[in-house]
Every structure is written in C-alpha cells, then in structure tokens.
Image (cartoon, rainbow, N blue to C red; front, side, top):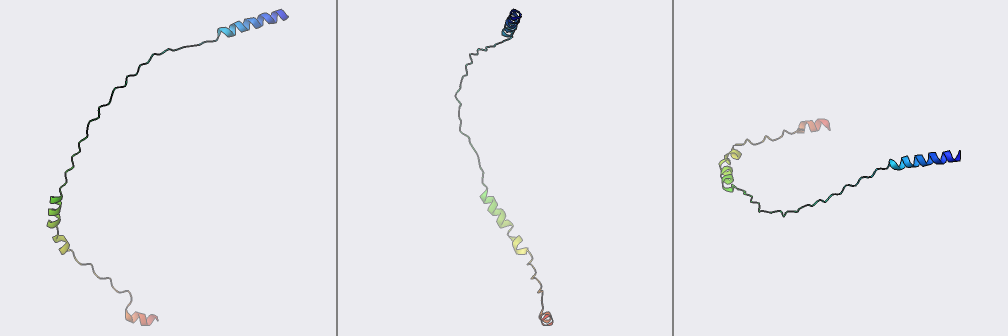
Amino acid sequence: MKTLSCILMAGVMSVMSGCHTSHEVKTDSVVEIKPIKIEPIYARIDIYIKIDKELDSFFDFEESVKPKPAEPAATETPATQKEGA
C-alpha cells in the first residue's frame, strides 16, 4: 500500500509540474523625445474709446427727458394722528 501511494504521489507531482506555465515578453522600446517649438502668440485688442464717448454724448438728451419720480404720498395725515392718539 505504501508503494502504491508513493507511485500515485509521484504521478500527481509530475502532472502538477507539467501544468506550470511561464511567459516572458522582451521589449526593446525606444522613445524619441522631439523638442517643442514655442512660437509667440499675438493678440489684437481694439479699443474704441472715441466712439464710446461720442455715443455717450449723443444719448445725453435721454437723461434730461426722463420724468422725475413722483414723491411718495404721506401715510399719516395730521387728522389721523389726532384720532388715533
């Protein structure tokens, strides 16, 4: 019985060792780094202050035409103050 178990054990060990797999991937990657060319950025900003001032002076008449706000009516009159007191 001992010999049979040793033979079975040896057979199982040989099968188990045959199931082992290993993989190796060899890569020789070469990465080239190219220089970056930095160019100046041009921004054009047009400011039309002269036209803005002319438009303001053109529409100045609107402020003189605006109606004056009405004065708020008094909530209490002298007659109601005497009655309530």
